Image 1 (cartoon, rainbow, N blue to C red):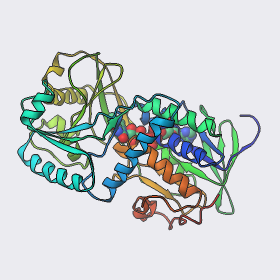
Image 2 (image 1 turned 60 degrees about the vertical axis):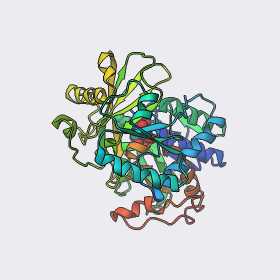
Image 3 (image 1 turned 120 degrees about the horizontal axis):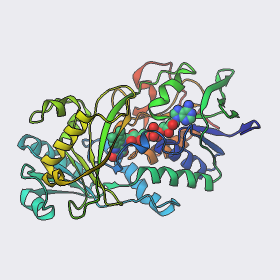
Image 4 (image 1 turned 30 degrees about the vertical axis):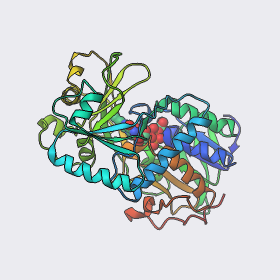
Length: 401
Ligand SMILES: Cc1cc2nc3c(=O)[nH]c(=O)nc-3n(C[C@H](O)[C@H](O)[C@H](O)COP(=O)(O)OP(=O)(O)OC[C@H]3O[C@@H](n4cnc5c(N)ncnc54)[C@H](O)[C@@H]3O)c2cc1C
């Protein structure tokens, strides 16, 4: 990039969220440039699993938000130019404890009332469907519209579709400075030159706070580490993806009984996902450990041990590899989808363990915010204002291109 460029909007970050934001902006006719310092899916979006979920929210506004976000994937499979291994087989929430079963039953009724396609399997039905399930598991709440996908292929598909709709895609380009004129955004400086723009969207995952700080905007996002084990190829182990109920507890930092001290310390809760390649992804853990993405043997051991509690035959399988990533976590675990007090500066980040699930709805809402429209679904409770760290954000409608 030698000469000075310009764009109506610049998105910083080529992960699931940034590529989705760029994609919706481009589809809505905005001249958008997306800048990624590495390749697409260079950050957390290549170090995760690909569950697109509604299972991990109690009934209420955010639950409906997740459901609406999930519906967008059913649309996207028809228009994205890359096969992102979309697998709409449903995901099961496994229960291994009578106390949890009572909560899950209430959740079942609440989700049904919200119009979710959910079914509850008792112990016998579960064993009939999954012959390798562990003896400890007593029920399964199935979210039949939950699905899985390949996050890296999703990012490539979103970036490609954005480009096909007129977006400029700049990988291997690092933003080094955010520029302002008369108090509003006027451009970004990169290691490849300046891009003049009146709108910048920070979709930079765990790196978003340092970008916001360039203009004095405090963005409270912390990296929350998670591990995934990848097994050799297997067939017939399981029919779809599962997660244990305890996963919802570790997400909110709740101490659990009936797990080992290491599982509790590392926030280990069982998640399993068969991949299109025939391997199986087994997770996961949750802890604040800075930007550390090195796999740790003690955490790996605890994840594997928890896995065999739910699928004992996992203990016969060989491990191919392990990776760790860092979830961008806000203090209340909700994403930040918001304008800021700096006119022209927007934030779409902080999705914690839901950045794949919610990337499309974030992209759609962000395009509306940037174009000065009222979002198609209420996202006001995801405003950066809720933290009270910054002067009030410029309201939607006053943020026109
Ligand atoms: C173990 C694990 C399992 C998970 N499983 C799931 C799951 O099943 N379902 C789900 O919904 N979510 C899951 N998540 C969460 C999900 O991975 C994240 O929420 C999501 O990937 C965040 O996407 P992002 O685009 O915000 O950030 P990222 O993917 O990190 O993208 C940010 C990008 O910004 C770029 N960048 C940063 N600074 C600059 C700069 N100065 N200039 C240019 N580019 C820059 C980075 O290189 C990076 O590519 C999981 C996470 C982990 C760790």
